[in-house]
Each structure stands twice: as C-alpha cells, then as structure tokens.
Length: 489
Image (cartoon, rainbow, N blue to C red; front, top):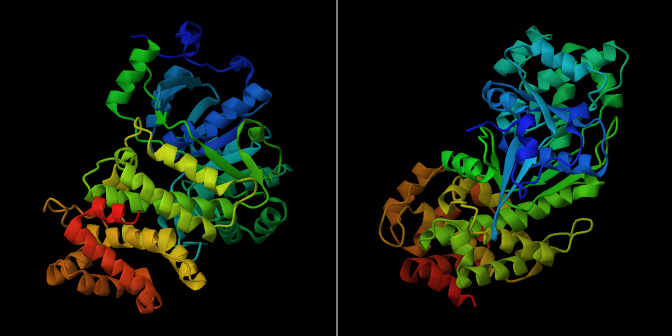
C-alpha cells in the first residue's frame, strides 16, 4: 500500500480532514523537544487549527532526544500523520500538517542547538516526562550531579538533556544579540513553567552568572495545564487507520475528542492564535491544575478501584454502570465546594464533560492501569478534599468510599477471590498488613491509616473519617463494590 505523504494528500477519502492551509508555504517557528504521541494529539493539533484561523510562520520542528524512531516514521511521510479520534459515534480521521521536520539530538546535537538559536524560532515547547527534567521532584531544584547535567556542563555545545539544550540555545541567542524564545512546558508537572524556569536558571548559573541573569530578566516560561486521553498506538490501530485512509501511515495517533489547554499568556516573541481554537489563555494556571487534580484525577482513581473490584475492565464500562455513574455524581457534589472555579469554568458542566469522557466506549482506559501507584496519588487526589470537607463539617461519604475501595484493592484479593496484581511502591508493605489482618475491616483500615506518608498524622485521629472508611471497607468485604456504592443512594 502507498505511504501517506504530501503527494497523496489530494487523493485521501473525502471524509478525512486535511490541512486547511498551503502547507508548502509554511515556515517553522516552534521547536518541540520530545515529539511523542500526546504532543502530536494536542499541541500539534491546536497549532494546525490555529494555522487555519490565521496563517503564520508557526510550523513545528520536532526533536527526538533519545531515539530516531519518530524521525524514521515521519520523514518518509513529509511530517504528515493521521489523528484518529475515537468518538462514541465512530472514528473521525484528520491528517495533521503542522510538523515540518524531525531532528534526532544524539545524532547531531549541534544542529538542534543551531535550530534553537535560529532567529525564526520563537517558541521551544517540550514534553519529556518528569524524569527528563533531571530534577528533584520534592524540591523542584536541578540535580547538578545527574549524569546528563554533568555531561552537558562539560560539553555545552553538544548537550543531551532538555534543560541543557534550552540553555545552549538561549546562550547562542544572547551571543548573537537576539532575544530569547519562549520555553513552553507541556508536561503534567504542577506549576510546570515555574519549575522549568528554575531549572534553566540553575543550569545557566552553573555555566555563566551573566547568562543566568539575562535569562532571569528576559525569559518567558508560561505554565500550562494539558488534558486529553491519548492511548498508546497499537498495531491494530495502525491497520485500522490504513483501512480507513487507503494509505499506510507509520505514525498515527489515537485520542478522545475532548481536549483542554490552559496557558499563561506570557510569551517573549508572539504565539499562534491558539486562543481562537479552544485554548484558554489565562493569567494563572494553578486553578485549572487544582480543578483537574481533584475533579478528574480524584474521580478517576475512585472509579478505578470500584470498577476493578466490581469486575469492570475499563473506565467506560465502570462509569456506564448506572450505580457507579450515580456514585460519580455524588462524589463530584462533595468535591465541587472544595474547588475554586477557574476563570470561565462552570464546575458542574465540567463534571458533566468528565462523565461523558469516562463513558466513551471507544477509549479503552483500563481500571487496573489507573489503579497503579495509589499510595502516591491518594494524598493529592482525595485526601486534601477530605481534610477541607472535615474542617467545614461537611459529609464525606463518597470521598471516604474512594479511600475504602483503595484499601480493599491493595489488600490484594478481588471479589471472586482472585489475587490482584497490585503495582505500587508500597505493595510489599500492603501485602504484609493484609496477610496479618485478613478481612477485618477495622484492623486493616487502622493499620493502613498508620502509614504516615499517605495519611499524615492528622487524618488517623479524625473519627469522622476513620469510622466511615472502616464501615465502607467492611461493606466492601461483605457485600461487594456495587452494593456498597448503591447504598449511598
């Protein structure tokens, strides 16, 4: 089968959306570090839409920081790829044209630094995952002894870390008398722009105090909040896209129709008109992060544990169960009073959007996958809200059930008596406690409350919390997840 490319664009099926601008005239203005599936389903699509609204020099040069795979898939396709949206009514296809080229940093780091330093580069965006920042997540500071940072300080012209590359590009621009580009972090890190700014300044100061001062005075590091479910692309997805497209595409991405992007509107040298195509340009991103953490992530975790225990493999199946859909509504009713509404957001409407996303049968989001690492997630996703509700004297029945189902899950036995593959840094500790205490809900909950890293030293003393959690846990053991959730009404 013929490969997707610029030459085949005009012969695609009529139902396939293609770039609505003259791609032959598109010039680069953005360099993106870490051109993974999420970016190609989020930033690149927003940029494609913005180019259709107002054409400008905002083409994207992608950069792979480790392997050539992405370049090898996209280069023969002239940077084009298919975005398959899995909507409840059926698949929707569009070809994204905003990516012009892909560089591979390890092959030629000097070429990438030169592209960062080029006058036409106005934004350097990145999605390199948390570990790609070479920092201590607890403090937000740069790890000066990280092997990549040590390498980059010794080889400033050939860096391999994202932070080292950004500083090398800014240093070259300063030397050439150019202004800085905007460094736009699109990773799921709290206050990601502020974190990136601190890391860049830390690294620059290790190279040159005057460079650090120049970046401090002139740099732009907007914080962002990104949201879209983008499952890993499978061989079956690739085959499906080829069948619908009529051409081979080695680099399709899969995602849900929903997307959200809140961005602090602080740019050093302009930006595409993302705000005309759905992005929310705001003065502060923190309220959006907070809303997502408590309403989306808190509900996701609670539903994952309930759904898994009840035998539902996916979020869509669990949330499609009327009992669990009602549970979610009750959960959000408890969460919303503890969430300040971000600029322009109706929290009840947002909850409705979340339920529709959860119930999308075309997205296979596994409950077991979401249930991983609960000891790291629970404090931010549920326990903060519980503390505020307790302080206000407000009910916590649904929130407490989320905690109780986590306890039942980490006890390691499902409702059919089968072992649960609990993936968590504290899994061994959970297993020891569950083995010793069995299905004694009071004893097991008391033992788990004793893990200070999760519950602190305050919540175990709150009887309004511990008693309702223990009661829910006992009901889960005796009656099961569905009956326990149904009893909440």
